[in-house]
Length: 174
Image (cartoon, rainbow, N blue to C red; front, side, top):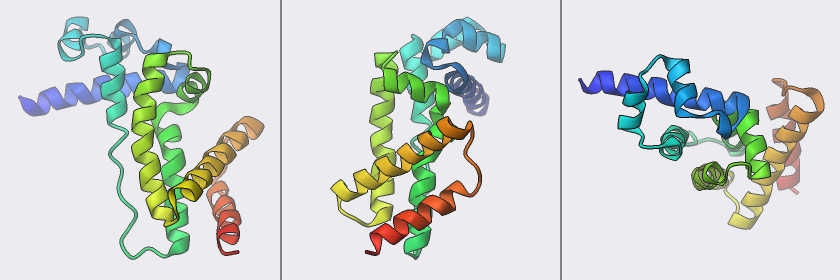
């Protein structure tokens, strides 16, 4: 019974995140999730009393990420921090959610996501092995570079991580 409940929750949260990635937080409605999953609206409301609770539960799944591998060298830690920093956008909220975050289109979503973002940033800063201020600045540079690349070209190619790691690695070693 618990496995069936978990599978339903996974479908609900996956649909909510897909709607968020594609069209932003305002697209995540109980009706839209019902249509995307085929799960009865009464089931949704039993599990999530409102849209905010649904979005918060879906976003909470973004918190669980593997830690940087033990014994990783500086370059591996840098690449891990880069991947961690952009993963929350690429596999988390998507461009639709990111745009809504920038415009604060949906304050409930922004608050919920910013709380989760703190945990992601802390892991990435720790992986970089620098003080919090420098780490925060490096993460901002990574995310800013990712968003600029996406805006400029419409996609981020496979060489982006290596390019950013090389530039930041050179800067960190000076």
